[in-house]
Length: 424
Image (cartoon, rainbow, N blue to C red; front, top):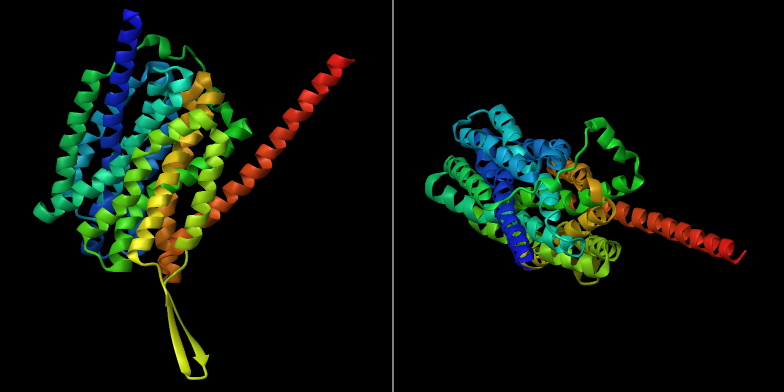
């Protein structure tokens, strides 16, 4: 009994320390979503260049996820996550001294390593809990995505008081402190390590499994979309509704905060109702919401018997923010449900599979801000970002319907053949 209590206490300590570390990593990963606005103004960047600036940390944070997941399987999450966090401290601090556009892009690549923390923490945390609690545990850890909202609370306040150059300095200190706290309160269990001498290429053979590609596509919507919108929404409020940065960041946090915190709720739902049902409803909620958000501010004139009649159709800031809030909740639940699929079906190599799926989600978060900016430059319509997301959700819904229907029919046919064989 005492051993079980000690084991449970250690697991909870690991979960708490890992969640704090991931929250700080995600806060810093999203840094350019706020400080990029004054940088854009001072450097005279266009929308596409701004999108690239905000997306650079997401690129390395995505590409590093596969090797980080595999290293976590081999060496354990504690040492991998600690070294990862420490390695970003100096690049974060150096951003304060950047002056040219390429300086920010290069340093952003190094800062982006912090985004790989998810692929370390997910398998590290999951292995401390029994299967029926893994969904909730991974959901609680994934709530560290709320760091996107934390960034929107902290960075504007620092900019208002000391300028944007102070933000990277504060964030560097935060990262160092979080790394030390994580090391102090986390633990190592050698039995969690996967004893394998297989090469990276051999472990990545999972990409031949069509299910992995399916989960990659789902995650690129719920996580990639979350990252892309978290980076884009502060600027969207500033340019579309003429809010100042503080108010814009506060309203944007109405999306980022539930999109991170409620991931634990998504884990609980996935444990109770299953990953498929939860993910299916998440996609439908996003589909409806993005359809409404896609409609641009419109003014049209109708000729009537009494003369021209002008009509204006536009989402007010309240309606817009309410729809974003709903999307944030849906994406939080979806991020947890997709990883419930993985923990159910890939018990022995969660780290490697989560790294691949996380890579897909992260690349979605990298590509989307650039595409958001390019579409605004090309069309002049700011809501085109939601039109793009609406299309990606359509793809997910169609894929889910036909693929799972096929698998259900195959399972039913196999059961029927087994019954016929037994009767014969």
